[in-house]
Amino acid sequence: MPRVKRTAAEEDARREGPEFIESLDRGLRVLQLFGADHRPMTLSDIAKAANLPRATARRILITLERGGFVAGDGKLFSLTPKVLALASAFLSSSQTVAVMQPMIDRVASETKEVCSLAILDGDEAIFIARASPARVFSAGIDIGYRLPSFCTSVGRALLGRLSNEELSAAIARMPLKAQTPFTVLDRDVLLATIITDRSKGYSLVDQEAEDGFRSIAVPVHRYDGLIVAAINVGAHVDRISTGEMIDRFLPPLKAAAAAAQPLLF
Figure 1 (cartoon, rainbow, N blue to C red):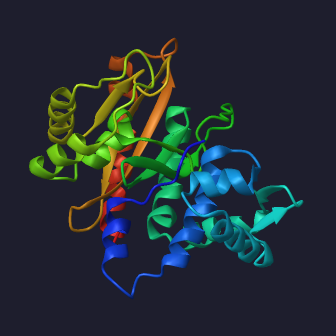
Figure 2: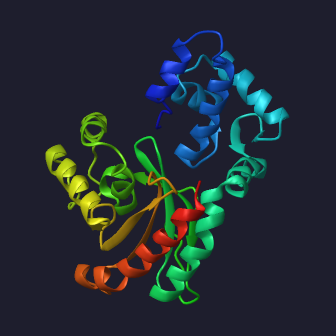
């Protein structure tokens, strides 16, 4: 079972002293476990994955159950629909989603392909909005879906906001795991690729994150030039070449990002 570990920032906050609420941190890590494992879990499962004593894990589960976020039958625990209120609060309050949704709708309509919006969360790209033309149905990448940033087009576009020194340090500490036989794992090559993509203004990834699938992404800048998100369009390799992706998909993606910039603060 995957463990939910603290990020470096969370570890730093924990060590800062009394302002850090350890019990809240533990409760949030337990909530994240359900998303990581995709199935109901026992108390032992949760205690082991969260690296917590059984008694502590039990108190957290009881608290979450009374709050309506977790349901249990005495043996197995699972999330309830109430947790969706947390995601809804983020999505409804996100200026980036509000500004970008109509724009990715237009990109999807123009390209006749799914267009997605992602932000950087640690070493992962998390998708926070998407648009699909009427003829396309995709059950793969949905809102909240996470992918490693190093091997995805949106992830590389987002990593382009780092300076060369910051980017080198980030890549050095990332756990690089092959997603397909085509995933680039050489850290020097990744560094050079992302720096080159930043200068080009787009990132194209060919079957590195998913077999048979390629995608192209552009960074989304806010008013002051800082990269705050990325948008992409992807398609199966049998339907489009990399050259066609640049010719067909890159112009509407760039147009959407340019139109959004003065509206993002």
